[in-house]
Length: 133
Image (cartoon, rainbow, N blue to C red; front, side):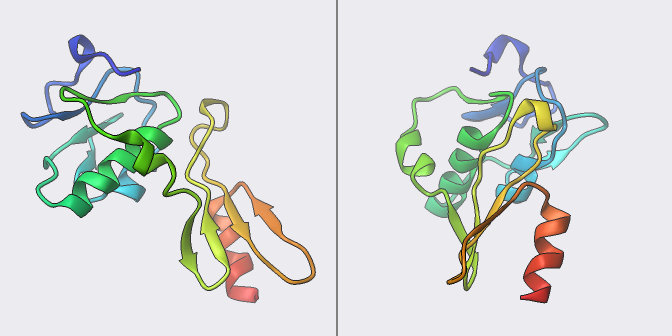
């Protein structure tokens, strides 16, 4: 769980923050690009969510973070964010959302096909495969 005492000073004031356990995997920036941005070697909150959609996307980033480096100063409903995965990104392609610290936050995708589903652990490979389907 993220620790407020370890929050980066680059985080703008507000509920969401990123702490010093961040490994700069980019997952939060992919999920909620209007909230998180890249610093030199980590992510930070550059814009606190203003809309329900931004708050939901930031909460999705929080539950997907492989190092639990994203936290909130106020209690939020993370259950809704957690049940948003897998998230549909194309007709039969789903972003699984969860990543492992051991894979440096590599994202996984599920491709649903009549002849059998495919689970991909690399976003570049998934994009190539989706283009071929």
